[in-house]
Amino acid sequence: MNDSGGTSLLLGSAEVPPVHEQNAAGRSPFLLTCDHYGRLIPRVLGDLGLPESELTRHIAWDIGIAGVTETLAKHLDAHLVAQRYSRLVIDCNRPPAGASSIPIISEATTVPGNEGLARETAEARRRQIFDPYHQRIDEVIDQRSREGRPTILVSLHSFTPVYAGIARPWHIGTLYHRDTRLPPLLLKQLRAEADLVVGDNEPYAVSDETDYTIPVHGEARGLMNSGIEIRQDLIGDPSGQQQWADRLARVLGAIEVTLRADVMI
Ligand SMILES: [Zn+2]
Image (tube, rainbow, N blue to C red; front, side, top):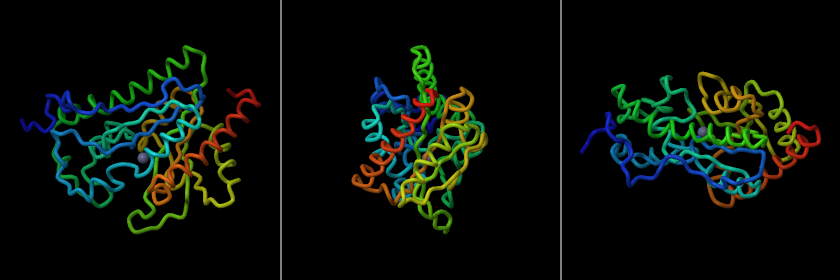
C-alpha cells in the first residue's frame, strides 16, 4: 500500500502513538508541553521526499528540547505532554487551517511530501497526530481543574542559533501575548542570572495566527502561561540539556514560591 495519507490509516497499528507523557501524577502546578519534541514520520509518508540531513535539523523538530523537558519534569515533579511526530508532518503549534500547519516550505527547504495534498490527506494528519495531542492537553487541564489543582502552562521550544543567515544573540527567550502574570516573573528571574542574554518575546512572539498551544490552552482557558525558547547550540548534548533543566527548575521553583506567597495559586 502506498496511500500517502488519504482517507485510510496514517499511523499503522505498530507505530508509536503521537502523545508522549511523563510524570502524569506529578504534583507541580506547572504543566509542561512540548509541541516539537520528536521527529518521527509515519511510515506511509516515507521521508517526505527529504534527505536525512534535512530530517535531523531544526526544521523537523526542536533540537535538544526533549532532554531538557524530561529532566525538568523530573526536577519539578511536573506533568509533561509532548508530541512525538515531526512538525514537518503537521505542526502542532500552528492553527490547522493556516498555511504553515503542513509546511510546503520550511525556512528555505521545499518539502516534496507536503506539496499538493488532498484535503482528506491533510485532515488525516490532523485527526491522527494533531488532535490526540491537543485533546490530551485539554483533558489534563480539565482533570486538574476538577481536582481543584492549579495549572500554569509552560510550553517549551528551542530555536536555531542562525536563521536565514542571521545570528541570534539570546540564550533564552520568553514568548507570550495576553498573560500579564507569569511572563514578567519569568523575565525577572531569568535576568537575575548574570550570564544570560534573555529575549523578551524574542526570537518569537506569540500570536493567534502563528501559535496554537498558548492561545488555545493557556489564554482561552485563563491560565497563567508562557512559552520558553532555548537556543539549540546550548542544549545539543546531554550535559547542556541537564544544565538547562537544572537552571529552569531553579527559576520556575522560585516563581512558584512567589506565586504561592502572593496567593496567586
Ligand atoms: Zn518549537
